[in-house]
Amino acid sequence: MVAAGKGDERAWKGLIDLYGRRVYALAKSRCGRHDTAEEITQSVFATLATKIGSASENSGAYTEMGRFESWLFRIAMNRIRDEMRRQKRQAEPTDPSRMQLGGMADPATAESEELLSRLRGALGQLSDSDREIVELRHHAGMSFKQMADMLEEPLGTLLARHHRALRKIKDLMDGDTLDEGRMKERKS
Amino acid sequence: MNEQRTSSGDRGDDQTPAELRSIEALLGHLGAADRADADAALEERLLAQTRELMIDREAVAEVHGGMEMLGRRERGGGAEGLEQRLYAATRGQLIGARRNAGGRGGGGSQEDGARVDDRRGGAGRGRRGAVSVLDADRAEHR
Image (cartoon, rainbow over all chains, first blue to last red; front, top):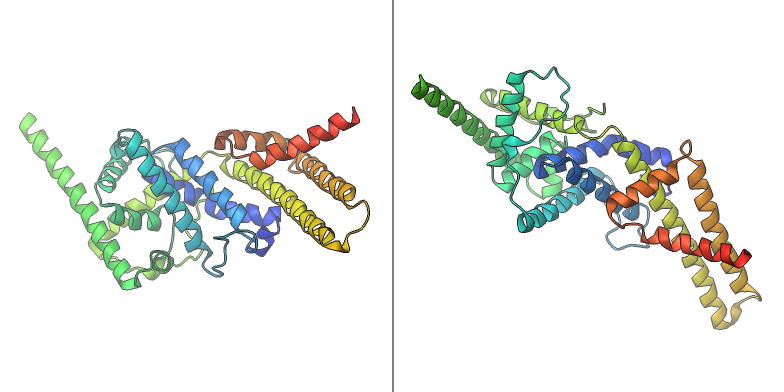
């Protein structure tokens, strides 16, 4: 972090390799658009470049030693919230179930794509606070401890909220399956 | 590519009930898909952007230092020809920074940087300021 603050390019590369895609995935899941997600990621790293190692020059400079990840993703979440507010004012929301899945690490069978598409749909039906927890965990790859630190909540509360969010997702997806089954029955 | 999920590696701090593990696994899969969805050149673009911002910051710090020196002179302790030296130092810093940026990263970094600035929609005010000093310098020598 100190080296990055002094402009060391290798240190920056390390930070970018470690966090670039995690910030991108968090933004992509929420905004649903590749270009918006990339803009948010660039904006987050631009903020990083101005705040790291410039404590005497800027207000809001990075001073939370040992809590870098929480600090970084707090910046990312603020940018994402700003973008979501802007999108709500300007356009119709993206239907999360219609979002492209993108390149998957595993062989992408039609069945798994369908499953992930339903999962995205369920994620889109969660409340903002539940969705935030799920995305920080699974898209940004944060630990519960880091999330508790970032959201200023007790670890136990956070774990309970995460379980509750997973349960809601499961219920929503099970509901989809039941609805599909009923539709098929009616057709036959 | 870059499939790391967390730097802390403490994914085991959760005790997810068995009936929810499949949902959790599916969410992990979705997160990985979104991380992999980023453009292959994302890291390269972020690095170019950071390089530009660091150069601008160095230039601003240099000017800031010069202003402090000028302030001291105004208070009575200055040396002769300070303004000229200050101008030359600032100009030299900016020219050197531009040259270094062109030379680093296997060439083409200026072009990459410009592309990032364009994509950010006008985030390069500091940069334009730097260029205008260079332009003035060229005009002076013409």
